[in-house]
Length: 621
Image (cartoon, rainbow, N blue to C red; front, top):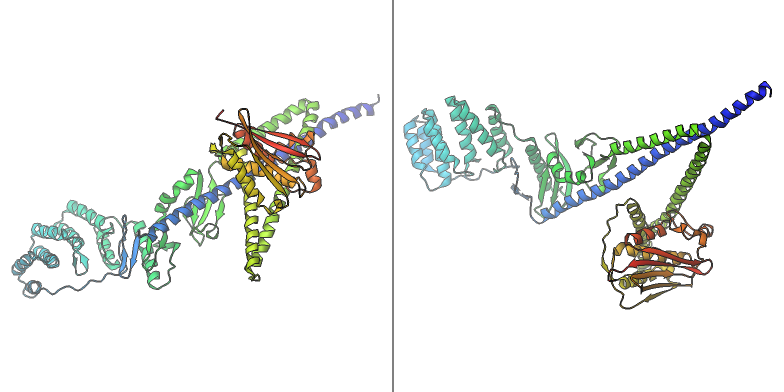
């Protein structure tokens, strides 16, 4: 062998080694990328579903609040202001009328002694006599004057006693202000004048607590006056959430007074730099419920924490007011959710997904290294991987195409019927009724398809909540047959129902078992010619109940009978005949029956029809 021949062999061996390895490496990277894309798509779809459930739960909660408001709870709107509800009240009212204060001659005389004659002792005596009046308003005014005179005389202890009596009169107005607030701030002034910092600190804390409780019907200037005094004495500022709630309440009250408020509504109101969620409902005098961001999270947070979701809320201007800054989110607008804010939702389970992705990548790399040492195994692995990839891609493409076609047909009909009805071009009531019946049928058909797909996904994922309970198999079969006979495409067929008497009850999930029987009936109708007979039977065999559907259609070849129960697999005749379907009906039937502890039997002969029998255990046996 010459030099060229010796060089050719290594080159061919290297080519035979490197080319498959390169192809396998490329395919491995492609599979890894496709797995990443599919994982992202699955996560996205799951997140969209979770976000929809979350938005529905939050909307229902706000709807419950609206119903409670309509029944009389919450802040009640009146022409004079807002009547507080149980719980945190309003810090101040839109406006407070001081009312008519009766003229008290004795009070005028005492004030004349105090201010005009500068007779403080006489004024104090006059105020003391008035302080024993049976009128609460007169006593309150006299105690205010008495405390003032005693302070002028330097009798701090006596002044504090007078203000303590005044404090006990609570909400009795004096010059438009509650007696208790006047008494508390006056006691603060006494301690300030006496230089008693410790007592002043305690009294200011009590004044702040009483003022910020929202128990007083005062206007904003009065509230500002007292809160400024509290700040001057180094007391706590008013709670920002309470101020924001109050401002929001006043804003919707003014809108109601102006006639610009809808009977029911939800809105995010910017108040004092803090967004407030306002919900209102009612008739001529509506009621409102208000919540600052912290209270919104306390109300709605359990919903998203229960689903392990991270949530951010944004107002109509796109400003975030609750929750962290999130990435890779699903955003739902108020038009999609009927919520008064934009909802952004992210999943909290990303670390586990990343770990799964890394594990799959390591498996692929290990496979590539192993293939490098075993060329034959590498070639075989390449062939298997390529075949599997093509089969998966073909199945996915067929499934997407079938689902798109299945959904397009009812959606097209629904759109056409809706346009006809919306254009008001149909005036004949009988035709309208017919169109409405068609629209209802197409809606139910679309609903069944969506429910079948969702149920199949949940069952495949092991997340379906089975509700097994005693059920009457004969009643279930008769009900499904009666419902199936009303389908338009079944009216040209005879559907027979042969049910044995005295069948014992079975333990079944009625909804799931009904869906399985409906799938068998639909298959019988699709794969048989119009005018043929479909037979439904239910009978007992030993310790089982046999529930079956028999048709006289095309039948299934023996070689395909086991494969048709796999997902996305359809018979060869179905594809050639152009019969619609997505290839999950029989797979769903098998899953449902196996979950009931039973099995599916198939008897079929090409050209003569098929019989599908659900073998269900009978607990009574």
